[in-house]
Length: 202
Ligand code: IMP
Image 1 (tube, rainbow, N blue to C red):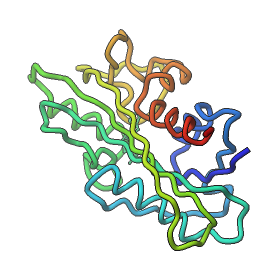
Image 2 (tube, helix red, strand yellow; image 1 turned 180 degrees about the vertical axis):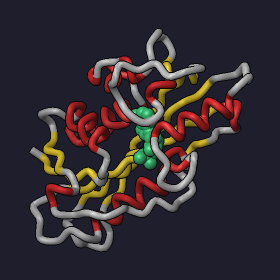
Image 3 (cartoon, rainbow, N blue to C red; image 1 turned 90 degrees about the vertical axis):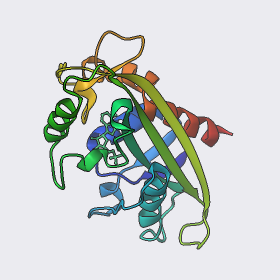
Image 4 (cartoon, rainbow, N blue to C red; image 1 turned 45 degrees about the horizontal axis):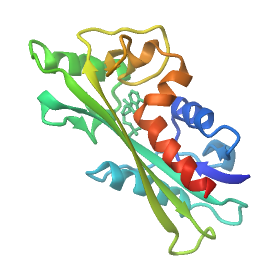
């Protein structure tokens, strides 16, 4: 079985990706390989940030029996806000803000607006090759889900981030009201991970 490091400190993402890749790939967290610290994400595209995160890990791993490193970056793109918060979704309400702060700012920005269309987009960057080599093979996988921003939070405790206010098309509940396996089947990250999984099975 392939062993890959997932370059994230987000335990929700780790849980989602492990469930989605179940059985196909062994996914190691940063903590499991002894890496800690904030990974920089200063690019102005999802692709750039995903690559920056994967790169950060790639440069810090040596002598491990690992087949590769991958990282994801996700943005919530709201039509009426010209695609914001997009690549700045994590820090929409400011540095070190909470998920709740971001949701409050989003609901405020959409207050009174008729158009509540939005999408989540995830880009995964995979780096493979002998670790430490200067030029890993770099591949990208993208997933997207369209939906609406709700006017208030709907949650039964599932999910994270903007999940309580995002309702995907063809569903009558928010991401935060769905069991993980349902979210994984239709979500931006789930779709990107499914492409990664297909690629890894080749
Ligand atoms: P990141 O840079 O990929 O960690 O994602 C940026 C921000 O998007 C996160 O801090 C979350 O607020 C939000 N986000 C990412 N993935 C999801 C998701 O699956 N549901 C809801 N919000 C998400």
